Length: 456
Image (cartoon, rainbow, N blue to C red; front, side, top):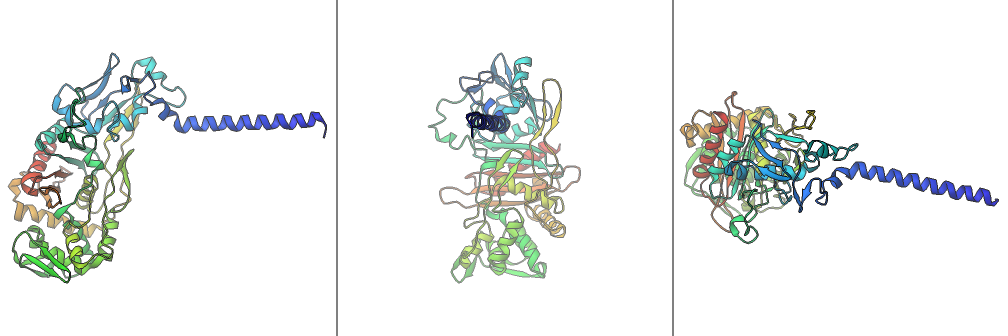
C-alpha cells in the first residue's frame, strides 16, 4: 500500500469521526437544547439565578398569576392568590420542582430548536402558559385551610381539568420569608402535597376495601356484621371508633365501622386486596402531564391477620397520594372511567400561535368495572344522605367518604374525598388537613367551602 493510499484512509477516518461527532452534537442539541437554554446562567432568561424574563402564567379566566416586567418577575396583585397558586406556578429559583416555572421553563422562555430564545429577544417575552386552575377558587381553598398544613384538589371528572390545586404551607413569592429555612411553620414548604405528598389514608381507604368486597363477595349487601367496639383476630384486636352493634354493609360504610371492614379485609385476604389495589393504580408510578405524581403504596403480603384488618381500614403501612385518590373518586363518579387530571391547558407564542397541551385522556392505571362504580356511588351518596347529612353539602348532591387517619407523632390527619353526582357539576374533591382530627368536621367543611365556590 503506497503512502497516498494510507493518507487517503487516514483522511477518510478523520472525516468519518468528524461526521459522527457532528451528528452526536446535533443529537445532543436536539435532546438537551431546551434544558441548556433554561439554565440559570442564561442571562436572557435569568438574573442573579432567578427567572427575570419569560412568558406569563395565566389562570382559566385570564387572571395573570406570573409575568415579567422591566426585567423582573411579577405576580398577581392579591396576596392570597399569590400564596394559593404558589405550588402550581412555582418560584423563580425552581426550589418548587413541580411548579410550571420549573417544569415548563423552556416553554416560558420561548425556546424552540431552530431559533433558540430568539422570540424572547424579539418580543421581550416568551410563551404564555394557560392553566386550567381558577385562581379565585384556589384562594377560597387556601383561606379555608387556614394555618393548617395540607392540600385541596378539585377536578372535572369528565374532562380531567384541575380547577383547584392548593398546598400548604406556602409563602408570598413576591416577598420570600428570610427565615424560611429555619422556621418550623415552613417545614415542607417547597413540596406540592397534592402531587408529591403521600399520607396514611385512614377510613377513605374503606372505599378500596368496599370495591374489593363488591368484586368478590356475592351476598355482601345482605350480610350483618356485629360491632362490639373491637374485632378479635388470632394476632390481636382491631379497635373501632364506637360500638355499632349489628350493622348491614351499608350502615357499616355509613358509620365507618372498623370491625366490619377489618372482618371483610381478613376474609378477602391479601391476594384479593392487593389485586384490587393494583387495578386501582396502587404501587404504580404515574404522572400528570409533565408533572410526576408520587406513588401510592399498598403491600400486605405476609401480613398478620390483625395487620390485614388494620390495612383494610386504611392504617398499617398504606400510603396514598391525594391526586391519585382524587382520580379514583373520578372513576367512581364517572361510572368506571378514570380520566387523568391535568392543569396545563395551552401554550401561546408571542406571535399568537396556540399549542393545546391539556387533553381528556383515560387513565391506563385505574381499572374499575362500571357496575361496581355505580354501586360505590350509591353507597357514597348514602353516606352523605344518611350520616353526614345533605345539609353539610347544600345543593351539591354530594357523594363522599371521610377519614381520620391515625399517625404516630401527633393528632390524626383529617381526610375527605368525594364528588358531586349532579350531572351539571361533574367535580370531584380531595382534602387532607394535617393533624386536624375529625374528617367531617375539618376536611369535610373545607371541601364544602371549595366545592360551593366551584359549583356556584
